[in-house]
Image (cartoon, rainbow, N blue to C red; front, side, top):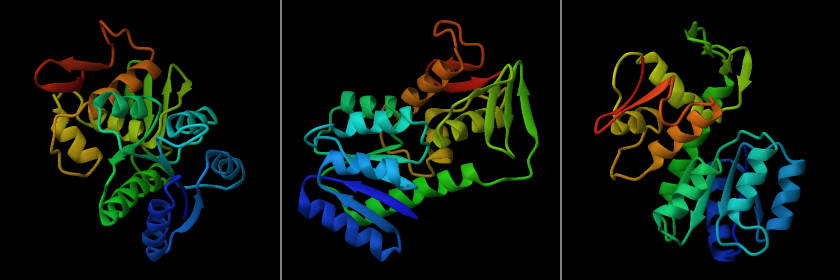
Length: 226
């Protein structure tokens, strides 16, 4: 699998490259955003690791560029910042994960593997049925979501969230359960990760924020599709 690594701190980029190559990934490593963008346009990538605070186009801008090109591979943001607003910014632009420096390289590798599992699952065919919910159609086999016969462009992570809620139709799913089932990691804090992704899905479904038709918020408990 092809992984883009972008970080202007040479020691960090080289370290990430070393650990990923030890896992037999093909790494495209760059220290500046211009070369990384050229790579995005030329190479069939499976995942990107982007430094937020890089000169030129920063990691947020490159993440936005990737999603505007309708590329759905996972994007992991690396940053020395820890503010929630920065995390929300990255997730809103379509990032899948967010790792704060300094980090354990083994943890980064674990996050990469987790993101690639979701991405691979998204692109594989399964033998499940189609779920219909009042104009919303979710194809488990093709991993496609349509709204009144118009395709809804979801990232693999967004699709998994919507599918999990649809499979639990009528049940209230807590943020903790949703995080642990979809991200397949322990829910350790009360960050806004789940909330931001739910908001992005609602936007793509053209939901009325005050009276959403599909994904309902059960205040203090979680979310459900009725």
